[in-house]
Amino acid sequence: MDLTCTRLTPALGATVALPPGPLAVTDELGDRLHAALMEHLVLVLPAAGLTPGEMVALGETLGELGARHHSYVTHPDSEDVVVLTWGGDQKPDAAEWHADMTYRAEPPFASILQAVDVPRVGGDTLWASMYAVHDALDPGLRSDLEQLAAVHDMGAFRTPAYLDGGAEGITDAFVRAGTAVHPMIAHHPVTGRPYLNVSESFTRFVVGLSAPESARLLTYLFDLVNRPDFHVRLKWEPGTVAIWDNRGTQHYAVADYLPHRREMHRVAVVTDRRTPAPRPAEGLTAPV
Ligand SMILES: O=C(O)CCC(=O)C(=O)O
Image (cartoon, rainbow, N blue to C red; front, side):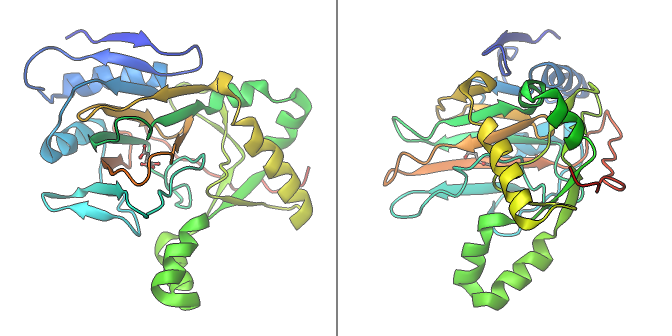
């Protein structure tokens, strides 16, 4: 089976033409998609129109599912399909650069997102290649970052936790969501390429630095991710599916469409079936 991939930007992303007809979700398809994902980091499948069951089956060809989010609702047909709905005066919460769930010791390796209901204009999603961000770092800074680890937590998800349960609600949500420490520069387990591994959503603190030093360094790094040279931007149609490698990318869902409604379905793939991927951060605590 051949998949034809058309690169979207020099930094990352490709459109994938699937074979015509109903999608046969096989291991062979999983192999091809995995190889394409390693090369392009983000795959766009136009007009895929998958059912929740097909999304789950597609996810399972890549790895084990089950990274349930601590606050989103799931689809009535499958606990593995998270439903993200915004509209009216409900402010979307993903207009921040992030890789998914890095407040966990083992964040999902990939996510599959399908547009179900989208505004006529707006509601695009951007991805950044964190390889490209890494490669643009000053070599001196890069070698300092290689020695450092940072604390990740649930960030602004504190607000819904607070609105639901006050200060205690935040503590409970922290316990459920967890806190993790990851190297600031990680190496991709398949390609071996280094990437910058901090995000404005979830990276809170650099281990070993004072609070102001940590804040200055992180603010500098977060700002680098904004450079358009590192991005691809997707305009969704209902039925468009995107698959991304959550290790070498971050994404940003543009929140420019209210009060229009936008509904997306997401499956998170926790483990990469084709790659054992431990990501230890131990020993990376030396201050810059
Ligand atoms: O809705 C989107 O475009 C992206 C949602 C998102 O940030 C996520 O699934 O982590």
